[in-house]
Image (cartoon, rainbow, N blue to C red; front, top):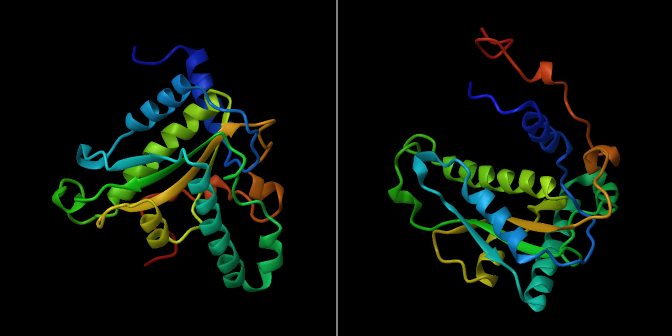
Length: 214
């Protein structure tokens, strides 16, 4: 009785299957109504204790976008060095589309989260899980709209917080590049580039308890 029509179900699973972490964008702007729908999709996400900890900063200034790009580039070099023997391989990867995409958002955790105890007394990191749910909602909505979204996590949170005047207690967790794309990757980009492969689902699902433990 509560099941969606099959066409709607197929569309939902298609968006899940075809969603990609995009790095290549066209510079065309995104119309304001579409952006409103994407942000509304994020805001409909579930959150622990209904705390709704997500905050989004839209980067409108070209100068500020360039400063974000510089922060990401600094961390990209440091990440490459930390990878040791894979440094050169990593440096060949395109890890962001900040200067190309139509819109840049910074997703952050709000300040004052300590007052939200419901669902977080033993698992305080559920605030971050809630923001991740909001980003995933936006990601799937963007794919349905024919737009690409890329999650950039290569940055120093303290430096980004200072750049955007994020108050103490709040924390940036993602830079989101959103925009029109020429095409979506057939597979996740890191899989296409032979950086990693998707694991078998059967190896990730256990019955009753962790295997191999007494």
